[in-house]
Image (cartoon, rainbow, N blue to C red; front, side, top):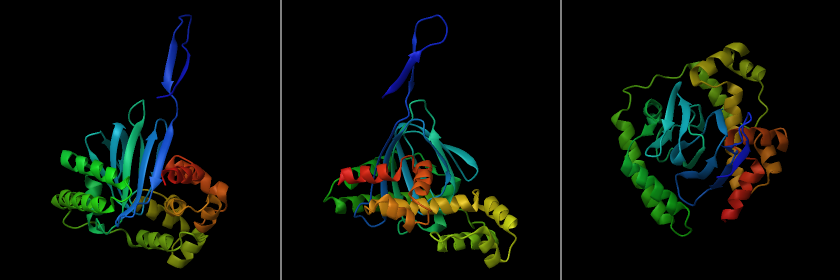
Length: 285
């Protein structure tokens, strides 16, 4: 791996080498029902801020390790585990080793895993299951090969079955309902992802004080409303970029002011610019 080398301090002649920031990504949408996106990445110094996805995130780490916060608790992903992050629950992520990490991710829709399993996934997102780890790796292999869609669907069915078995064994008897106001604000944000909704508009529509709205939403979901909305917009932008739309059109279609606005938030949440993300996908096709 590339390293930055520089003389060490003091009169002793030696060289200090540290890992340089490296960001390699590949992303595509396979023709396999239930798989929203495949995302492969290698990061050294990049750290994800708190964000959400509108799909289930199935993650395996091939090199290094990742640490992240989910449900107000810290977790880690060593190489022998499978990590399953539920939709709409804020999380972050950063390298837990000096040389960074290499990961493979599948984003799965709720046709494979239902919303009733979210609570169980928050309670235990890291699964120490060697057979599941092997099956997920083989699924990634099938998804890279054009013409192997049936194999990928078959492997996905087995992965989904094993994930459901894990989650249902520790499913909570009854999930604590979201506070009504916070849920209504989230629904409003979901309905108007691309609109220029202001906090004042939301307060008027929901008959609540703006500050109370922000506090309630942040306490319930662990993320402020604006950050949630930006995550949703970036999620839509990823889909459109995988459809080969240029970043300038994607910015307009997803509610960002302009391409620069999209680029700033996209790079912060995904680790690369929209153009780089779209370009890496095009090299795979």
